[in-house]
Image (cartoon, rainbow, N blue to C red; front, side, top):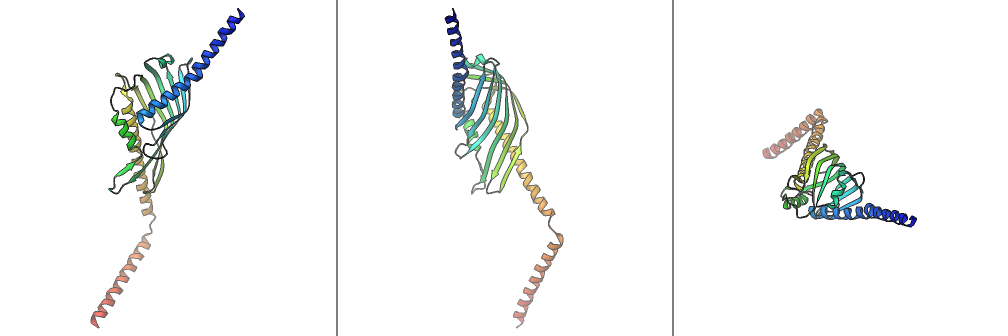
Length: 249
């Protein structure tokens, strides 16, 4: 009887180990693969832990590489999810809430010879638009009843325009996001998030540069300007006098 009891405990521990550790690894790799395919660029997750008994999951450090550009486009510090754990192994994953806490978007842009803006977000947006169908190519469906994004910021950089500025973004909240018929297409939501973030960054960067220009104008000494103008007028007068002398001679 003791042996049977010991075997049951051992099997239970093995099952727990397989579900808790091996299962997390499988889900992590699957999530990385699906996100990489959807976005058309490399996506890495540092750690993922599914809390099966409490119906939750935590992700630390999710990184999205730039597409056609070097470096990272986006870094997410933490993701907390409350979900129906049993739905993970079904055809439809049901998620009650996801909270994304701490996002840093590395946005850099430049002007080409035609004076058009080129940035590192455009290639990703084009990939999202290409797959902008409400139906997913994957058989795995999911729905997020509530999605909260907080503590987001964007680092705007342009070497040619001498811009290096970090901008905080407003917290965002969405409901019923996913790839099911009854949900809002997550690809459209993702595209809208990028559009709003970039628009906000551009507005603040431009207003900041305008403000700097105004400050420079305020600091200009009017007396120095008048003196400079007088000097130029006198120099012009002298040149005119010299020319007249030469003509008279």
